Image 1 (cartoon, rainbow, N blue to C red):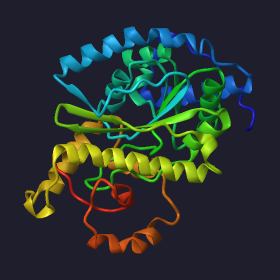
Image 2: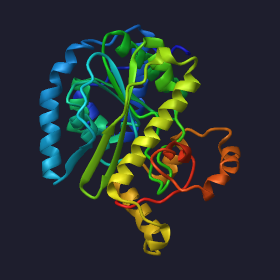
Image 3: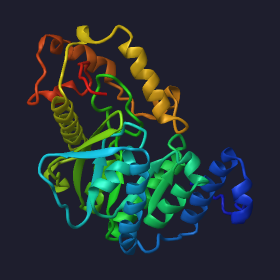
Length: 318
């Protein structure tokens, strides 16, 4: 990592409030790099969890103001100790709704913070504990990984989105995953809890999966694939709970309306182009599509939902 400490200059809070967002993104990226080069450690890793009740109250007020509801499928689960909550990512207020549903505090791993650099939510996240990064910057990604491991080694827990981008496809439950989540878990010896979420207008449906213990896996690739299968099954469980229907029964313009709704939901955080640029692209993605072509003749069910990680199938309710 080339030394950038000589060029970084601290800017006052008042001046930062008037800076354009593009300049703020550069400033905070350079600040993270500077702090890492200077050996600055994260502070109050565990004690920040005490802030959760206040943050959760703020999230509940926000949800009620938006007239949104949360439904948790399955039996209530309590996850004590250190946990990496690995969540699917659909955009909108999915981070907020999952965090409220967790019922406990943890740090957030947030890519491309955008307006969070300037609004009250960003301040709350800073107090709560967060690891920010610009996903297209390789150095920033590396720093964020080191910070996340520092959180875990310091006794903290983490909420992360291993898809690396919001998933707005009609029929792919989970994008291919980055291996970073599995590597963090294996390096820090912390269990993973998969979390699936889906949004139906103003209703959020969430389901928690079974714990994954890194010591049960030989490598990060194996744990990553198991995690993706678990997340896909959770999404299928949610879809199935809302009802399934054939593509032929949907309106002709369903696909167009679905995309328009998703674009509206992710604004101003993302665009379809930025999602395609930041999500993980498996080098064997196209080869796998051909290899799984036989699934076109297989009827999907809960038991084989994981097989559709790269495949197209229809569900209702969005």
